[in-house]
Image (cartoon, rainbow, N blue to C red; front, side, top):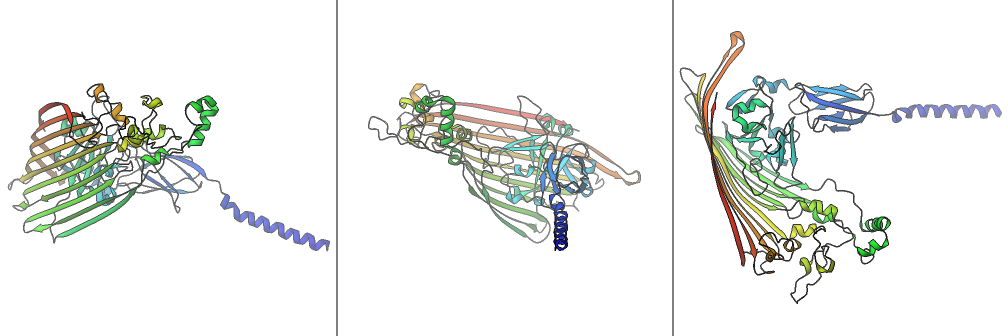
Length: 588
């Protein structure tokens, strides 16, 4: 019996060893790999995808081209980026990797627009990136600016806190000036855009529908200034819209619905945690003084100012060729609700292009016209910071009646820190009132277009004469009404003195800007196959005129608390100015 017992125990022991051996791969220790991804010029690649092969474990590079990922020591990393050949990189137990990606050879042979004319990408003397919306699903983008996010190394796009217009800041290889503009020059169908608007967050890229864009070319370095002068010192973004093509008419209709929400909010104290914090650090007397011993609320101010929304985008186009005339007609409607309450943008776009050719394609004519109407409801983004600093033990509304049988509530019923009924200017403003008691709108009408004529001589087809006539015009009407009796109205005594305190205020802005262009250049381009070389010579003249008229008016409602959202009873002082400039550039 004793021998049998020992024999069974030995079998159990061996079984346990075998089970542990099978389980060891499951407990294999992973390592943290830190890496850097760039291109052959040493430029970091932003947003490159890094995946562990055969798994869903992955990450993306940051604005400096760096990434961090936890993987098996023997894993293989698959690195991919638009316009570059994908790579498989074995880890081999290394914790630091340097990965240099190569541009796709096919892309190097494609023709890219560089301003005055076009060249093969492999022949471009400067750093050039091409983004094609059809390859990256432009339908989910509200603004053409969204197409640039992570699409090109050295281009950083910072959005304005969920602004529904899609406006934001674009920086190409960082900023170069401390007090001047660092914005890149935007060129749409050969017309350099001006962006002098003083009202609203709209810009040249937010006024164009992403679905109407054929390609976006980004010129990043000093060679861009040889084309457009000093205004291109911050880089150039060249937008080419879609054109008609030979063949039967093709109709495209797209419809998109997107859900917008704040991906993450700050983890803040609730009402009870905050009152305990005050008591433990400042004592019971402070708790009583600040009113935390009475009725205490538990307000999540971030939830009060943020929301989840549904936005819609519809576009339709028809393109084809009628006889000798290739054409494209397009229209679109966008309704974008911002995640910050009260923010919204509605945009209607329409346009057409004609691109006929004559004399065996020696004469080419391109006509482009695009128009946009946008209605933007602005929300004060200061409400986001106000929600973080506001006391969580206080309610959104108090509905404390004002004296004198006015029938009004103190500060229109919104809670604000007001000892003895007088607002403390050092206290935080109610962020919900900051959104709901200010009605700010921008309405923008914009149109741009050009006619470009390119003629190659019959007896010398390598010699081209090119004439480009273009225009841009936009009108912006802005108005902002601050409700009477709001805490903002009671602190607004800088407009017309103390008489304005508590009264409704109205701010109006009207502006018109015009931009006209004439470009003419002669280009001789010839390839010499025998010596595998080419000659490209160009000379020309460029003239552009900017005209800008702006007028602002400030109104104060002299009737006090009435006419919360109307103009009646307002008195005003106004100021206006006019600016007219011309630029002349010789090129060659």
